[in-house]
Amino acid sequence: MSRKYYHPASIFFHWLIFTLVILALGVIELKGQFPRGSEPRELCKTVHSFLGQLIFIAMAIRLCVRLKYGAPKPLNLNKPLLVLAKGLHWTFYLLLLTLPIMGFIFLQAGGKEVHFLSWAWPELISPNPDIKKIFKESHEWLGNALYFLIGLHALAGLWHHYLLKDDTLRRMLNKIKPSH
View 1 (cartoon, rainbow, N blue to C red):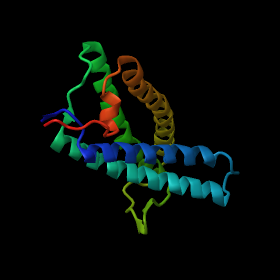
View 2 (view 1 turned 30 degrees about the vertical axis):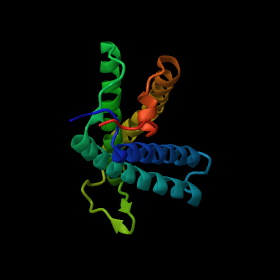
View 3 (view 1 turned 120 degrees about the vertical axis):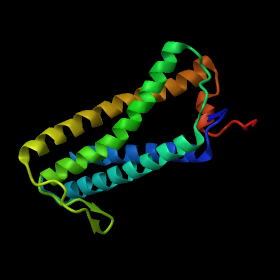
View 4 (view 1 turned 135 degrees about the horizontal axis):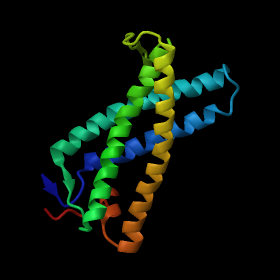
């Protein structure tokens, strides 16, 4: 389905996921300020894990919303830029679904229980230091790549708004009125 504007649910989940990602990245960076094994460091890791699970759930819902309501047609019809933008969006979706799964795997492979609210996930992966190492390093590398992609995404939005002077950014801010 083609639209001229984003559905309000798409806008809500975009900004919810943005907020959750910023919090998850912030708390994992904060973790490094505390000594290994300390209570604040462990709390940072627990909060990061919880936020990752929320990101996964919000991303799954966001994809369902996108499938149901679609996305507006791009305003800039430059073919290479359209391919780049579409690739960036689907890379975001893939990373934001994959990173929480990778975190879950490396925690369980490290012999740790993973909790969601007051519920402990069943052990799906037996402790295995080799698997833990691979998934932990991949999770960290892709998490760092996410910083770059977030910056690129923000710059693209600003480029559309200030240089191209189109409504691409305004559509995600719900600042234009739909004309069905």
